[in-house]
Image (cartoon, rainbow, N blue to C red; front, side, top):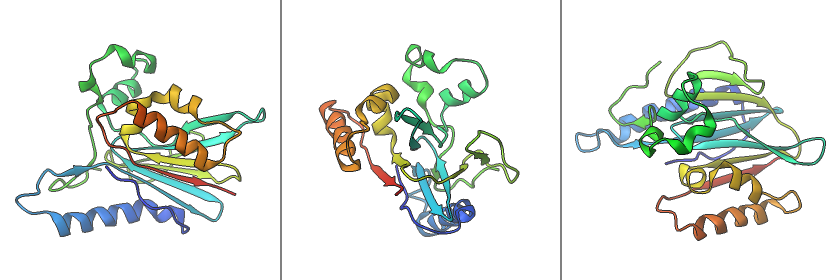
Length: 206
């Protein structure tokens, strides 16, 4: 699993950087012994008042933003490239039915794999409107406007698969600072004795 560093720059170039990095990864590490090695990816770039988020696989990116009442609203700006999410997108199931299905439906449809050329990402903006451009099933690209007070959270699937969306949101308290909220997530994750690993990166916009 992987989460990419955050940094300033032209946010429109993030998808191109990910594609280039994927190509370099293939060139540097592909050998007969490593064919099939895979990883997920979540990356975020901030620049000129805009944000770009790019992911592959089920490593997630959320935007946490306070509403008019002061409540924190979580928006998942990444897309899970899983069998389950594909079924949801096609209207075959409802998100609340997830617990009724076996874990095999959480299997990945797309991620970064050595030896496999990327297939032809749907680009989205923060109003869930598709943007013009190339479409690639293995890559999801999201663009939005930066706002003071926003927090962006990047995490591997060990976090959301262990704690679940509802618990994650209940653990995040508006009265606590970023470090305290991350500590609360870490404590809950460790207390669960989860078998999966977990990596988290957070960015708070001033």
